[in-house]
Length: 189
Image (cartoon, one colour):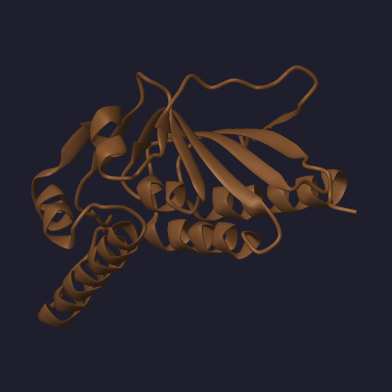
């Protein structure tokens, strides 16, 4: 007998860092263990954040695809590293008034003294992070590496029509949670 379809809806509206990603993963694992869904439908809006943490979350979400469908619905904005996480969804949607922002990576430095070797190491790390993002986004959409490099150099905000034309999303639609559906919200404050 086929497994009945069971979707859980999870809201996430926050930035991306190591602590929040660990909590996001634990929240998702707990929801899976409690509800045994065939689909997790994330209603997501994020201004992005830490690249390494974002890739950890992206890879976690991709790892779930063998046992369930991962759906992403942009309910506000998907910025920076959140674009990579968003593309972990097998099904991707955006609200009509949502947006996407692509820009280069920045690093925070503690006050101190830096020699040539340290500065070269940081520049190499920045280049490597942008390359990983470019490769992942271009692999999961119709955005080209050349377009992404341009966006990373100048910063570029895009609307849902652009996202639809580039296969970042599959449909523009108003978010809707069916009556009686399991609806959870992540809040890590």
